[in-house]
Length: 444
Image (cartoon, rainbow, N blue to C red; front, side):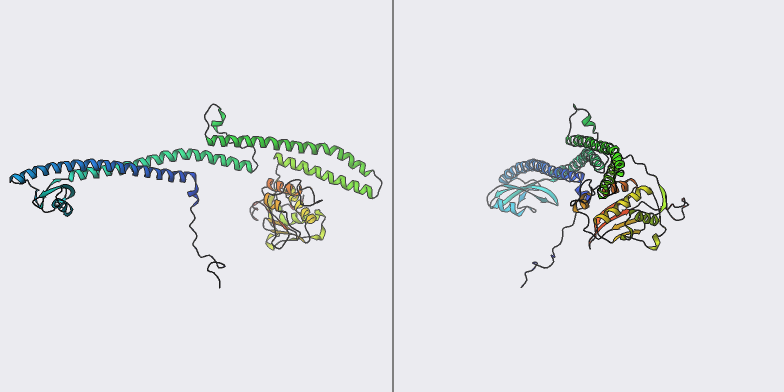
């Protein structure tokens, strides 16, 4: 016998999610200020109402008891009782009548002829001798005080909210600026700074936001110096290696034919390719690349890259008929560099078949190998980091990502559900077929 809810779907209702603006600091501060103001206003209102009511009722009670004393004297001497007084007069509250007939004096707020009245009663021959004084003015006083409390509380809450919203908005505006700068730094703009005026003058008191802004600026400056030093080191090393590699390459050509000389030439070519990659990465890091845009037919460009890769029939190009004459405005050399590196990576580290698909402005390179490593899917290509031994130096995909960013293309890496690595290049918007643009170029 199965237990309810053990294996079956849960039927409990999910709590409704609050809108995004309800999570902001401004909203939370407004709610907190409103709650605190309402609580404080309620507390003060109760205290003031209680004190005013106590004094007003006390004065009316003293007046009623004083009149009851005069009525008692008149009753005992047989004189005529003043209006509104008598033995068990109509309108006397039953509770006060019972108190008087039991032998005690007392007062109680009630009504007389439809108006508020303060009743006072005393025992008289087993009955209640009572009188009343008008309580209308006292009741109006209490109502006026209550209205003033409510009105002043509303005004105080509104004023406090306005002042609080102004103060909180100033803080949140500075926080948003700090967050925007942090995002710019994360996107690669290492020149971005908050430059909070409070941090420029050390003698000026600094609040928490200024401390955070100053720490972010310091972190960005330190990071920028370290990255610039790394970029200079990479560029200097690559430049210094070019001269001896050129001589080494010339010397390798003078070696007698044979297997040893072939190995030397192959290693020299590998080192020269690595040096050129380092130089290209240093230029990408320096953001000094200029884009040479022109209009090209995409399918012939892709086919030419495949032919230049030397992979032959191991790579297949597919495209729908609608994309056969698709034109794109791009930098041909950089796009060929991106596609060439993706093809080389798929051919070297994946397994055939390697398929290039052109579907509109999207070029997909897919192999059927083990797929991309997890670190690459999470954080993107990283130079000099590869999975396994002898699987390259990790610069090919790094250069592809950098060149794609230069031409404004999106480059996404993922693994196919049925196995294999998938790299997708999405080019910027394509020019229309009849927009009067220049004739598309399909070659250099």
